Length: 152
Image (cartoon, rainbow, N blue to C red; front, top):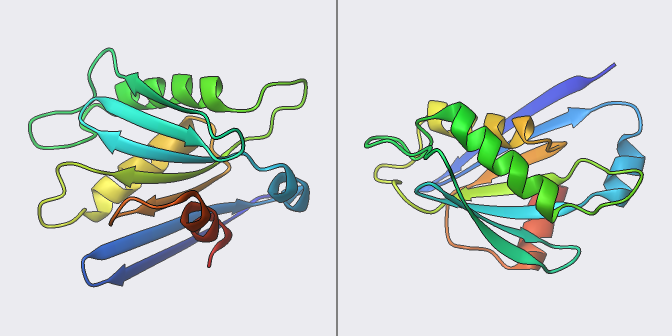
């Protein structure tokens, strides 16, 4: 059985959303987690694996950004991020779903709406993430990404 926990925090102009799936094997998943730091620009994901320190940029084809929304074409964004996650995640016989911190870097005028936050979270979940944190603010160090993913 899987339970869902959603926590939303707003501190000034910084919003943080935690969406965690809790289920059987969660301790094992935590030990084997492959944390990914995903920065989102117009029609582009820049992904860094914290385990391997490998970083790559993935351009979306077809484009997912529209005139008004960073993620305006959901399926195109999900497909592009799924490709990126597959390429950046640890390979092997037993692949563990990554924990993802996703950060929009453009089109943030006035902050993110709940719909935009949810779109970011759902794109990452659809790409295979076991846990997603949406971060709006300055770019983070690897240590800060790990802290955010662990709930600190």
